[in-house]
Amino acid sequence: MNTKKQWKQYWFVIRELTGRELKRKYSRSKLGILWSVLQPLLNMAVLTFIFSYMFRRSIDNYPVYYLCGSVMMSLFSSGTGSGLSALADNQGYLIKLKLPMRVFVISRVYTALVNFCYSLLAFIPILILFHIRPGWSILMLPVLVALLTIFVLGISYMLSVACVFFGDIRHLWGIFITLVMFLSAIFYPLDRLHGVSRTIVAHNPMYLFIHCFRKVMYLHQMPDGSEISTLLLWAAAMYVIGLQVFQKNKNKIVQKL
Image (cartoon, rainbow, N blue to C red; front, top):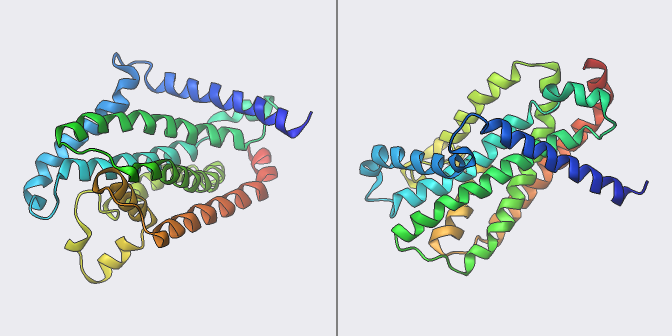
């Protein structure tokens, strides 16, 4: 069987696994996948109420500012958070089915990407409410999302391996996600920080992803060439390193499971 035909079959499996994950996630919810739109909107309402007074003079259209950071962070957190347990949760399939182990990690990240696309629908009423019309810069949106997805996939490869040998990584990663969230300037402007704290946030790749997303979505600015180059390097580096770690430990994973 040629490689192209194999990957067509694998892509079918990925879509089926994604459908299963979405059904499982919303199986007991009356609103179902609509929560992918409602959740960022409700979070935005709460955080806007809390922080709008603090930052109303330094951030125009604060709800849009927050929502840009929130949806990008949700792709990172849900993609890596579910990707880390992709192998451990599918032990039976890994043993019974002759599929590349990568398929299970890819399906988890793809599920997070689908949820992200639904979350983008939350932008429509917000942009209308604040009279913001997307400009030509929005054409960069697919590029940013693709780079972030590759970045997330690389990290998920490494985490999925770690989870097989060290199950407590699930709990530790949740704490790390919280740290990354507060170091990504989702709630506050970067110019409020000084010294070491500002340097740390400015060099956080998730801050740069969010910063470029804000430029594209409501500032009507194209990301600088240096910003895109940096994101490309982060995405490529994480993917290559993650895939190498994954491939190097494949046999050990099978033995452990």
